[in-house]
Image (cartoon, rainbow, N blue to C red; front, side, top):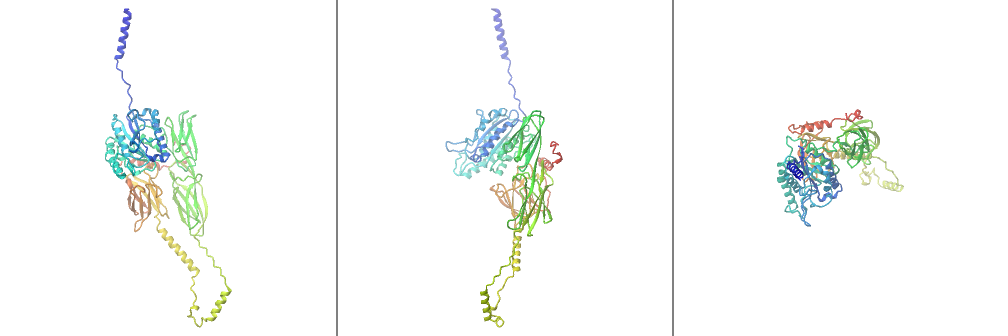
Length: 639
């Protein structure tokens, strides 16, 4: 009995001792680059008008699992539209997949809950209009309320349209007045309250536009929000990104990599950029023994590869133009090149005397001009040679004066800043001048009766005796050579008038405080042209040809009274202006860009503002882009 008692006491003491030991909770390792992000997803009515838009948003959310999020990071995903008091009312924002009462969720287990967010796409939890103000205000307040003060904070605004908080019949209870008054109230609140609050709390704003967006409006959001400090590892400042719907997932993850610094996107092994006019592409990838990976095309193409060995080569015939991405579990080393062939295309006149020549792909019907090389087009016309520089999509016009001409055309490229192998075909054509005048002598028929009558009449009136008689006066006849001379002179005057309305031959140069941003050549016999400023174009010229009706484009026509050019734009911005530019002057455009014109005698150096901390990177990037690929190194793309 005593032994049992002692055993019970000892057991009780042992249990008490164990319970008395303090239990220390396992600490969660927090990365120094931990971040909190709010993703705002546009649910306005315009999203449903194009099936590509909801699909792009769905893929963008699903792709968030491909980010190596820093430990401790949190994500909130909110749908936004505009408040609507009809049918019981709908809010301006809606948490798509909250955890309890908190929209912010841990990024560490994002694979387990992201589909909950994706399933909401296609429903109508918010009003049908677009209120960027209330969406950003909700996101800013949510990030400020988070207790984790050491993390970076940023907002990703995915939208397909411009701010429009109401329509003709006001239904938004957040504002008053008519539709224009309500939009004005929203913009005023956004720029005087919401964005300054974000800047004060270091919350970065990254707008990502797709579809028919207001580029100028989105560009105004990012600079007013938070900015990276001098000690930040972030390499880019917040800016608006305009993307095609299919590129939305890639652009979203690219921004996240910038802000988190150490967060790596699995698909960022190598950016493989292939032009749409390529006939074939070859990708060579080095990997671990037995490792598999996937190559994904811009249109959703999926190519599985890898496995045996440590090096794989993938051949792609007639690839879709755009960014091809490598998806793998570990970083891979890749090299690639593409091949394409080109041929001049000669269009003889069906009327008139103008021959048109352009360069087109030989083996496919692509109309894309993106990533076009600069071609040297050699034209031999009746034994006389002329060399013209032009890009894909450009047409050069030739006026022929002979009745028939023999035209030989061949293209070449001096250098190329892409990993491409180009081949060329020549062409020869006979063109007739359709303005050539054919003179056919009139057929003379004599009527015997008329001759007899005239003879009788002459007998009755002796013109030798009465030369002053009206019947003896001969009618004035216009000689045939005078008719030809009049026609040639008239044609020449018309040609001079038309030529006087053509633009001067030379080059437009776009630049800003960081230096030259692009060039656009004006060929001879050009009546007018239009251009657009692609601010998001990180590779090549930001000054691109466009159509006058495209949003944001500038149309260029010949000036009058001493002015060389009249430039009207940007189209559709609501702020289009007609501006004048003379050779030797500089014209200020929107967003800090300037435009000048070089005709060979007035070329000016573009001064780079070296006080801008991002200039060295821009200049370095420009130098990198000017490097060419040696065809001798094609067999080893890793040199």
